Length: 250
Figure 1 (cartoon, one colour):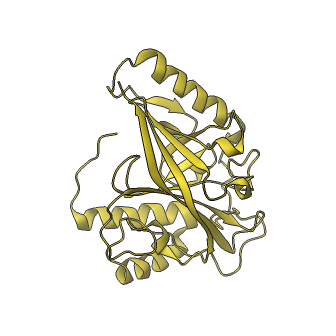
Figure 2: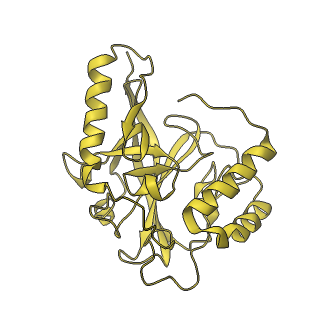
Figure 3: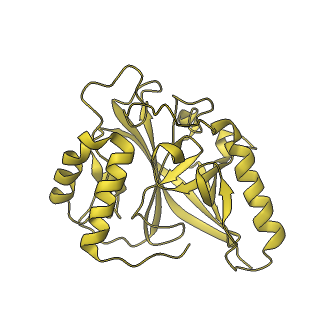
């Protein structure tokens, strides 16, 4: 997926403003500002959930649900499979395909985690706002793309919607495989090496080197984030994986 070149200051303002508001509402912007100032090496950041979650708040972000939001999670696996079928049937080479529409905007990649089921597949959308997370998996803006050196950070719901993609996150263990397929017919396979639970304020988990924002990345990694406990958002479950193979694209 081509990137738009922005100045560093403009990119930071866009990520801090747009993503913070989409995830947590305007009240969390100050936390984003503090996190970014403290960790200037970050390309993107998580932020803290509200101290007291609203009783009807989103279990991943703590944000109050929108009255106009549409939960299309039940159609997400079909959308992912349709995208895979279209890419395979119309793309004989590594040429990027035209946009594939999904209910959360354009499907940029497809995520598959075999341990969650043979047919488990979810569309990946750019952004981690309400519309993306209600329709599949969201990619944190500013973090790496599949296969790139650095950290591809993804988020998804564990509860709070009709068919949360990461409901069975506890089935993932070290050694489990996570596959990301792009519209260039390339499948990147990551192997899980760490699973942890962190505070919502631990923004380092989506640094280019997770947990070490000052370091320079040397390998492609993937971080998958969801809520903890299953019906709350007091902490975050963080699954870390490293790229172990790449297939397709020709």
